[in-house]
Amino acid sequence: MKKKKILFNILLGFILILSTHKVDALSTSVTVKADKSTVVVGNTVTFTATIKSDKNLFALEYDISYNSNLLQITSGNTSNTIPLEGIKAKTLTWKFKAKKSGTATVKVNARSSDGEVYSSKSGSKSVKIITQSELEASYSNNNYLSGLKVEEGTLSPAFNKTVTSYTVELPPNTEEINIKGSKADSKASVEGLGKVSVEDGTNIIKVVVTAQNGSSRTYTITAKVKELDPIKVNLNNEEYTVVRKSKLLTSPGTNFKESTTKINDVEVPTLYNENANITLVGLKNKDGNIKLYEYDNKNNSYIEYNQYTFKSLSLYIKDKEIENYKNKEDITINDRKVTMYKLENNNYLYFYAINLETGKESIYSFDKDEETVQKYLKSDTIVKETVNKDSKEELYKYIILGLLGFILLTYIILLLVLIFSKKKKSTVQVAETNEKQQELEDNNLDEEELEFTKDDLLSKKELKEKEEREKELEKTKEKLAKDTAEELKRINNTNTSDTNVLVDAIEEAISEETNKNIKKKTRKKKTRKENIDNMED
Image 1 (spheres, rainbow, N blue to C red):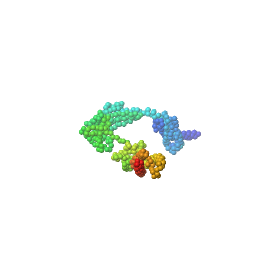
Image 2: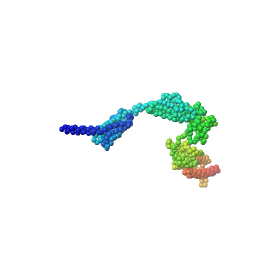
Image 3: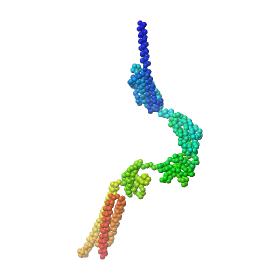
Image 4: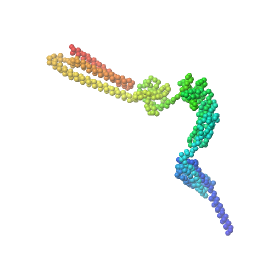
């Protein structure tokens, strides 16, 4: 009995030992991290959870909890069951968008198993959420230097972080100085420290300190390099010094070449334009700024040099003929041929184009010598004459037809006037003739004495009145012919070949009609004279 009891106790102890071993056999942990400790509202923050075990894990269950008023999940599952296939660590990731200010905590609960024993663990991480204004308010505004010096000289006055302007005297031929400084706040940034090139005369050097919040402070160092025998120039009550180093002169264009000239028996660098015979020298003012001046060595005078560059034109050139041109020429522009027209006795050619910047249509002139283009001042006049060929032909045809109609109508009116006048006179003359004939019959005249012409029965006064009326009529016809000829001459001056045939035909018709009228007039005069002579007899 005693032996059985001993064996039971041994078996129970062994079971207890096994049970204890299994419970403590799986050791796991859950670690949660965030990629930033502070996040601004509207930005994202990433949380990661790492589950580790001292044994291979074959199963994992997890879930997360967070304050949805502060965070909005954008990626990752809030809970899941994952087969691990015998690994000792697993990392899970979630992304959140910050919604409003506060402290947000993400907690991860994990239950893992090695296939026999389960282990439950949890971990968490908190971040601070702030607004943009709260973030900016937290930035440092310290933009001071804690030290400043120039190795090659001594600053005046002595450095003080609240003093921002200093000067330093440097020996002749100094070309470079080393500026050293330190910032009062490690979060600030500094620009302008280190080695700086200097030239003879005044050099302005700026050291800028920018605080974390963006505010800046500028420290200015005026470094004066002493110059041997400076050449001083006084212009408009301001003192300048002549630049003695060629590398300080910036050429205004490729047409200027480096050269030299003598000022006060000292050779100085210049920029020379051979085409325009212009010599430029550099003058430096008290602030160290350099400008170019045209130098006249004969008068030892200086004039500030001003060079202007005008904006270029972007033109759409129309393939359109300009009226009244003397000749035309093909010019190559941007590897393309453009037909241009010569209008006047000069070197300019003209073409029609649209300005693509303004949309305005104009005549432009082209200078072949300088290859420049500008708007032609008389373009309004030429544009009126610049009509396409078909429109011009139609216009002249309508003018000529209108003129012909006017001439025809005038001749019809004149013809009607003549007919009416002759008819009226004929009626009067017939009546007078009948009266005369009756009188002759009453006087028993023979048949031969009764023969007469209409004009023979008219008195001298009536013949003269008729002659005057015919003269007025002839004058009217001559004036009409003259006006018509002048109008044809004006039309003919347009040099439009298509109207020449019509103009010639009109002139020929007018000439023929005029000749007929002259012959007719001569015959009438002759007949009238004979009648008057007969009546006088």
